[in-house]
Amino acid sequence: MKSSPTILPSLLQCDFGNLEKRSVPSKRRGARGFIWTSWTGDSYPIFPMECRLSMLFRKLTDLPLDVHLMIEDPGQYVQAFSDAGADLLTFHVEAVDEVVPILENVQALNMGTGLVLNPGTSLDQVTPYLDRINVVLVMSVDAGFGGQAFNPVALDKLRTLRRMKPDLTLEVDGGVNFETIGRCREAGADLFVVGSAIFGSSDYAVALDRMRSEMQRHDPQMS
Ligand code: DX5
Image 1: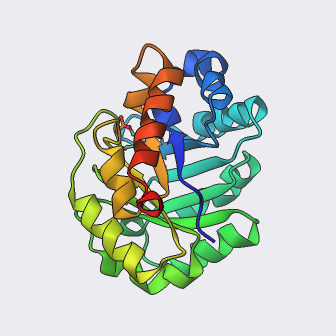
Image 2: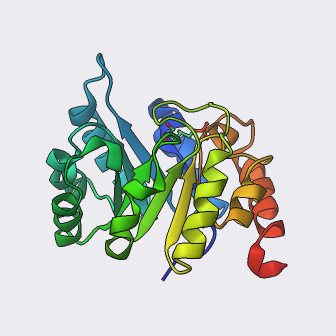
């Protein structure tokens, strides 16, 4: 059963030094989950810190925690993020040679699971697995940094996936803001990962409320 339309504040953009102060207001204003995006880079000692932060964040909220692993070899970190409290764990289809063993490992740990694809990756890479996953996360930017410009190629993928699987939860990430959320909703997205448009605003609650209204205004079921 697909998710109801939900905005997921992306903690990648959050002020980690004030995780509770910065993120909890989103919860009060109706955020129904958060996304924790883990990524690795040459000088980025990802996992000890990432897991500890994720465990800390788990103590701050009982809302669902969606973990997007933007890393090579995500399979070796499934247990760590299960222990850290992830409810949903997604990984990049570009980053693995074999998808199914990781999906099975995530599901064996009672987490929801899904596949992520970057703008340059064809839908053919994920369509063989659509019956085995809970969500497809369609990137409208190349994963790794917030504040990038929205790439409309994501809209075509969302529309195609929605036609193929009416009941699959579709998620979109990258450059989602007041100007783009409506088009994403019309194209079939259910979950909206938002970083800069929330954590870059002076009032998170106002930013969330404005985007939620715009999302609802463009809801295909409402038209
Ligand atoms: C993109 C990350 C997103 C990012 C979104 O690489 O996966 O979580 O934080 O940030 P914005 O909304 O600023 O594009």
